[in-house]
Length: 214
Image 1 (cartoon, helix red, strand yellow):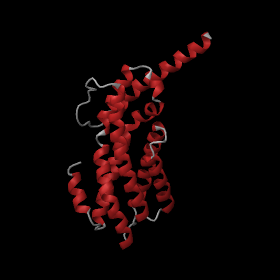
Image 2: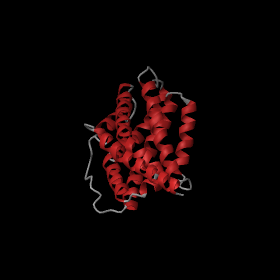
Image 3: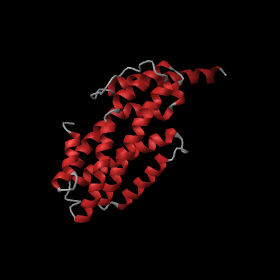
Image 4: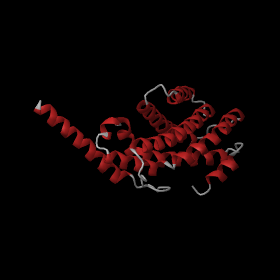
């Protein structure tokens, strides 16, 4: 009984120590808005983060789906469509939806970045798919860059409620990776828009204007 209790305390301490150090190192990207929790409860802070995360991630995934079609990467397009359906289904556990969306956006971004740097998606049919991707890519990116301060606020709430580290296992794994996630999404988002412009895709000028100096 003593050993079990001791192991539990050690496990909890390691998780809490890891979160503190991970965020001290990782959360160094530009932040938008107020980083303070403003007295919000853990549930309120989590709700705010998840609303922005899921909305932006689903937009980005929709863009990636159309881009995979433009690039004739049919297997990737099919997998992305299934991920979109899974993440949209609120009957699935929130933690699993969070992890699925995070991994899907991250993996797809790497695949799309590699494909767009090659001579691809230049046919008339490809440009139609590309044009469908643009508004989703812009909306997704503009939402994604709002995540760092919300991730910081959620971290502060978790630190204030020490049991939250055990209750929010999926969040504990994802939150320290948000800065890198945002940075990659921004890089690929810009590439998507510049690629549309160089390919003379319809809507490229509007997308460029919407992103501004981002």
